[in-house]
Length: 210
Image (tube, one colour):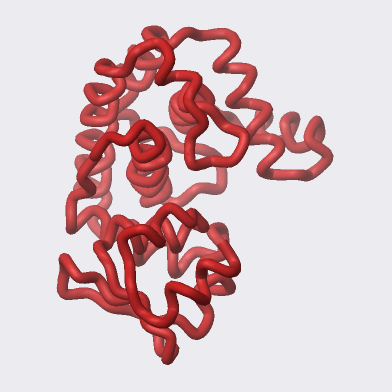
């Protein structure tokens, strides 16, 4: 995947999400997101960290969280959400939209996955629609399925994914799941909310593990 194209996609999605966040009202920021235990405020705080996390800071956070990656991410997001209000976080997110920096150990496509998925984590609980661009979403899906970080290989073992809004499919399983690429991306990253837009025999199976 061309690095400059990925950077351009990521910048555009970040700026688009920043514009989306501008329209949120006070109560929206305290709404539970699709990430269990995280509010919308927490998720946005987390998004601002992707261009600011350093390796020493990550090591310190892992020690503090006793090796629990999810706890480290949650604690860091909560601390930042406590330090900065919505308007400040939006400004920080927007000003680093074109940044080439990414979190230690992450791959070039991870920031794109981050903004696409977390955009849905925020929008869907608020009852709002945030469209996911086809080419970018397919690229993110391919990355998530290939990366050991997201756990998609284990989660989707025996399941064949088929996009209904793109000429794309992956997997050799007999349990097929058909739906928009955006919903398939949510399933691949462990979000049960993706089940609302899909069909097929594999959907019931995933419903038991998500």
